[in-house]
Structure formats: structure tokens, C-alpha cells
Image 1 (cartoon, rainbow, N blue to C red):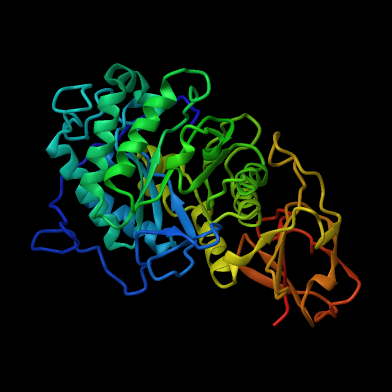
Image 2 (image 1 turned 90 degrees about the horizontal axis):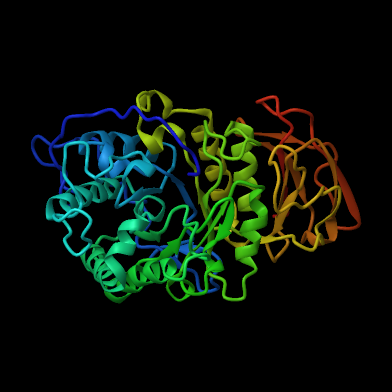
Amino acid sequence: MNIIRTLALAASLIFTLCVAGQVRPGESQLSAKPADFPAYPLKASTNGRYLVDQNETPTLLVGDSPHSLFVNLSPHQADAYFANRASYGINAVWVEVLCNTYTAGRADGSTYDGIIPFTTPGDMSTPNPAYFRRVDQMVRLAANHGIQIVMDAFETAGWMSVLEQNGIQKALQYGKFLGNHYKNFNNIIWITGNDFQTWNTSSTDNRLVAAIMRGIASTDPNHLQTTELNYLVSGSLDDPLLVPYTTLAGAYTYYPTYAEVLDQYNAPNFVPVFMEEANYEFEDNTGMDYGDPETLRRQEYWTMLSGATGQLYGNHYTWTFESGWQQNQNTPGIRQLQYMKDFFSARQWWDLAPDQTHTVVIAGYGTFADSGSIHDNDYVTAARVPDGSLVLAFCPTSTTITVNMTQMRGLTNATWFDPSNNTFSGIAGSPFGNTGTQDFTTPGNNGDGDPDWVLVLESP
């Protein structure tokens, strides 16, 4: 969130509470409990490449990033927000446990109605029971909608000076408190850090963060842990001091997303990787790429065809909850994110292996770049399942690509998927045999008037 903002945060009335997933008289009626929610908490698959639930069902992580939700919304508002996001297939949201002005909260970290996180301000050994009761409410409300909280144990950009003043022992104690308090809440993934710029420049800061993570792991070994390090590009596995506690790798980049996802995917000590942060809708962090639908689609499909187990979307209005946020929930970005989730959920996404050596797409794949503008990049990401029944290739620009058809297991149906409007177009000559090569040319502009398409090759 490398952005300076002037925020106009809306205050709201407290609504009555939703406790332990039960709706009681006077409480919100928005929550539901469909039987098809994943069996949380999530964990790594046996091959370490994707996330599964407690029934070993592959679970695609698709989320939003309402960083300031705990402090800027009432329980009623949060319940309505969760209902809206669940309607788009969102199953995870990133929220800060501690939220000050850096993440659109107040300087003292208080909720909109004045509850502070520590009974002694700045003393991490004094967690305020009233504050954490409010957080508990929000976590339970999310669970009622099948949503996990990607719970940021410690937001480093805004709170690092507080952590430094508290020291290692209080950091460890704080981590133990969080782990013990939330170990029985199934719908949690832990994240620590946010724009953690000093992890590799300070001799103490990452030791302090490691102490929090160690504390969480000691009292709550059953939830995934990840980190967010520095912008403009980083990955959770970059910091060897934090790796022992990292069971889910986060990729963070404002550049073409495939490069950092693949960097984490190819790590010798790999764990499942997800895109934790890239450009948000309605924002421009680098001066190169505004968060319009085309930018978001490129980030999303590049990510998914580079070995990721999912990703978090972000929206300027629904991370700050500034004035107008309710009117900016139902955006093109979130609708197209749902198209992405539905597209991959209908296919064997968990077995897709990135085509890093171009044995599938052998020509026309553009230029790989680990920095620079998203809009200026033409790289085609492709992935294949091992049995050759499925190949997907995301073409961000108008192009002709050449596919080695011997990588398919048999007669192959070929279609173009339009990620802007969730429609498919047939390809002349399909089905194709699995011999030789075949050229595929993108069919002009998509429904948004942009050139990006997904090639779908399926061999039943």
C-alpha cells in the first residue's frame, strides 16, 4: 500500500453482535451457512503446491483486502460487506489486527467508536479484551459467509516503532497471545508484516517480527502463516529468518506478477504461493499502471498460470472504507475476479504446471520481464496438467502463438475465453489432433475493447 492518502472515513453506529455463528434476536440476519463452504482451516497439499481444506479438497484462494475493516466498520456494516463479497465468490479477506493511519485508521489504533487495542497505549503486553471481542465478532461474521480472515498479526509499516519499543520478549508474548486466542477459530490464515521495508536493512526489525511469528506458531500450529515484505517486489521466502514459520508464500509486486510468483514457486524450500498484493482497483502505486480492469486481469491470469494457489484483489474504497465505499463495491474489477474464479474452479487448476521452458507454447510468447510496466508487457503465461488433458495460455496482447500439440493427450478442443465478460468463442478447425504444431491467433479485442484472451485446449 505504498500510497499517501487523505481519507474521509465514515463513522457508523454499532449494531448488535453475531456470536459463535448464531443469529439471535436483534442481530444481523445477513449471515448464512451453506454446506459447501470449505472445511477450514486450510493447509498445504501433500505435494506442497496448493491449498486444501480439512477434507483434502483443493481450495482456490480468492480474496479482497479490506485492511481497515476491524476499526472502520460496525459489525452490521462488516456483515453486509462480507455478504457482498461472498456473492462474488470471495473466500478470504486481509485485515489488520492493528490499524493506524498508515492503513486508514486512527493514530491511536482505536475503532471508530473509541476502543483501543492495548489497555496501556503502546504496550503490547496489555491486549484490551474489549478490542479483541470486537475482532472476534468480525471473524465469526466472516465465517458465517464462508470467508477466511487473512489476519495481519502485526502491521509493520505503521507500527514498527511500537514493536521496537516493546522488544523481543513482548513481541513473543504478543504472538503467543494471538495464537492462543484464535487457535480455535477455523477461518484464519496468519500474515505478519505490510510494506515491511526494513526486513533486510535493520539488524533487529525482522528478529522482532520473527518473535511474533514464533509466538503464534508455539500456541497455534494449525493455521497457515505468511508474511508481506517490501514493495515494489518481494516474496515471503526471501527472508531466511522468517522461513521456518512460513507455511504459505506470499508474492508482492507492482510489476508483471508472473515473475515474483515464479520466483517463490521455484524456491528450493517451496510452499504453496499466492499473490498477496499487486495493483489495486482505482489506484496507481508506480505511476505506470492504473488499477483498471485490464491491469487487474493481467495480474490475475499471469498469477494463476504461474503456479499460484490463489490471490488477493484490492479496491481503494474497500481497504480504506472512505466515503463512497458502499457505492464502489460492485465494480468491473470484482465482477471479473469472479469470472476468473469460476473459470479456474471449473478446471483442474491445482495440477497446472507453469510452462517455464516453453515446451508447450514454443513461439509467440513475448518477452519475460521481472520489472517495468504491466501494460507494456506482452508475455504469454501458459500451464499444462501432467496428463495432457488441459493447457491454458493467457495472451495479454494481440498475438499469434504456436503450440506443440504433442503435449496434448489426444484430440483437442480449442476455444478462446474472454476474461472481461465470461464468454467463449470457438476456433475454426477445432478439434485438433495431438501431432505437430498449431498456430492460434487472438480474435481481436475482447468485450472490454482490450486485447487479452485465454486460450483453452482440452483433451477429454
